[in-house]
Length: 109
Image (cartoon, rainbow, N blue to C red; front, top):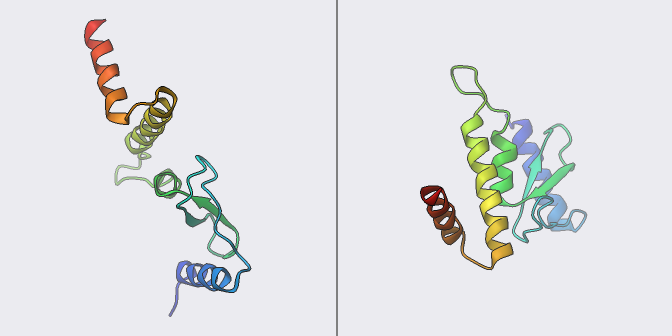
């Protein structure tokens, strides 16, 4: 038996092949390489186009660990990564250099 998730993925694949659904840039950061994200598998052609990073965030933000707490640490790390990426683009530097700048500033404070 095929799951709702599998049906939704097949529907997107077929729609893309027929040209009725076209891949779009990430709705969060405008990255060109994206994944079709389903908020509801019962609506297979209602998708949000997200890059791998934002797709992971959308997929995991509501998951709960065994203690019942949200995966807040994962969410915070993802938001921090997004912020570092934005700062790197603004400064014209690599993300690793932005992190080094922050660490240096904290040590000097």
